[in-house]
Length: 143
Image (tube, rainbow, N blue to C red; front, side, top):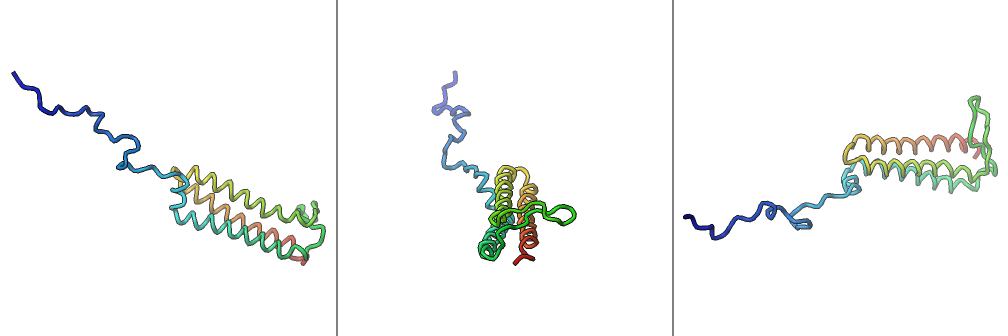
């Protein structure tokens, strides 16, 4: 007859780490993963900087602008939308809105598709540059 072991083996489930155990690495948040990517940091922050400089430029030039500005042109180059000069701030606002949407979408996609997030950030930066061209074509010949 065999004697029972002095210390019986523990059940298999007791060997698994418990939730909250200090030895289990915490899964980083999506935002933390995104901000560890220095390429994306550079692209998003550069796009935000270019947008901010555009707003600053418009604030500096605002007093020199005429009260009515042509903000949209048709295919033949004729102005088809004329608004008050405050309407020019719609361009950097549009740029910031698209930057924000691209950033939030990038947070959702980054863990699965880093390339898509880089494309979103690059597109946001390119859009800010295009808005500079739009502003300079609208107010460049007026001031």
